[in-house]
Length: 175
Image (cartoon, rainbow, N blue to C red; front, side):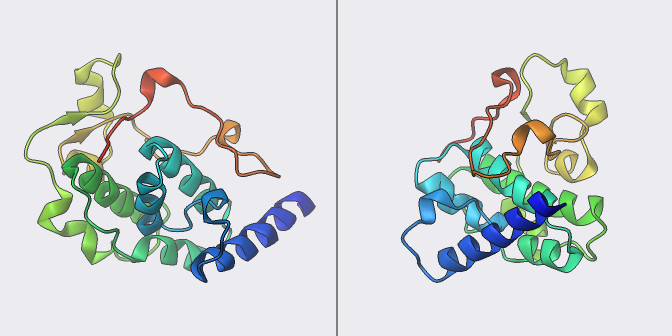
């Protein structure tokens, strides 16, 4: 428990620096869904920025703090898939973790796709149709049952390093 508390203290301090425009922004994981696009704009692949955010979200023990992490609307990106993915993530996390009402921004028309997008190459489409959580399926995004899980292999207690996920299932939406 001490390691967790120490990491939380370090993260809280670094997030304050980020919000105040500190110079170590590149080393700080996104603290909210809205900040994921900041990481993408700085050159981090979307899947890394999302994984870094999920580590912060899943290690946060306070439901109110978790709620604040999904409340602010991310800017719209030129990539409609990325916009829909962030909308699905906001809705899914709110429902999955029972954080109250789904943020209104997730229901904007720009957070939906006109045609299907399959995130997991190598998994039969029929399985993805069945497994996709409602927040993703409503947006025509088809993926595995728990696309926003944060496994222990993604956590690094003393650094903000992202441990590479299986490249077979990595997403590649770009600007």
